[in-house]
Every structure is written in structure tokens, then in C-alpha cells.
View (cartoon, rainbow, N blue to C red):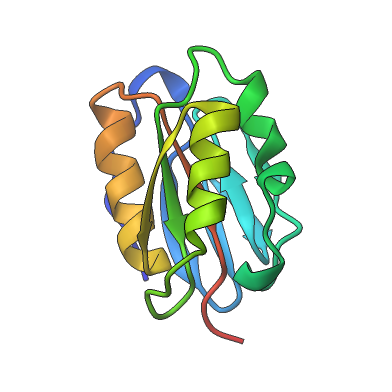
Length: 127
């Protein structure tokens, strides 16, 4: 799926998703990713049940600090454990918004265009 974007200040922008990965700021990334305004990282979480607060440790290094974490759960929206949501708030100070990965991609682009301190942890869709 293609996404039209506006790129303020050379932040990472999600340009497309599907077929098992993402196109972010002109580069193809296979598998799950953690998109921060400054960079995109491979995210070693393939199943939300295996996610821990430590899976999001890159959030601690971002400046200004991330306030909103969009969690893209793949093709369908799935819930996360309340304990994980609490741990992310306590460790990194983020509010977690859970949605399917397509919605998370689009929401990330809107918020980063507004210069909001946002990150997206995205599970891939497709093969």
C-alpha cells in the first residue's frame, strides 16, 4: 500500500507497507521495525506475546523523548497485556496506542508531520 507523505526536518517517513515489510524514507525494510523520528531499526519482535519492555529499549535514546508509541499489530488489531502497557509508560514515559499496522503507519506520518514526538513499532503484513 502506498502512502502520500510530507517530510518535515528529514524525519523518518513511512511511504508504504505490505509484502512482509515497509518502505521508510526511501529504503525497504523487511520484517518488523521500530520507526523513530531519527532512524528506523529492525525490531526483533515477531509475535506480540514475546514483546517485553526491553524490546523497546531504543525509545530511551531518542531526543526529544518519545511521548506516543504506536503499536502496529499486523493485518489485524490485537490487544497487548496491560502489564506491558504499564511497563512502557513507567520505563519510557510513553502512551501506547494499539492498532493494525496500516493505521499505525498512517497515524505515525500525521503525527511526525505535526512535529510530535512519536514512534511506531510495526509488525509486518503479508508474506
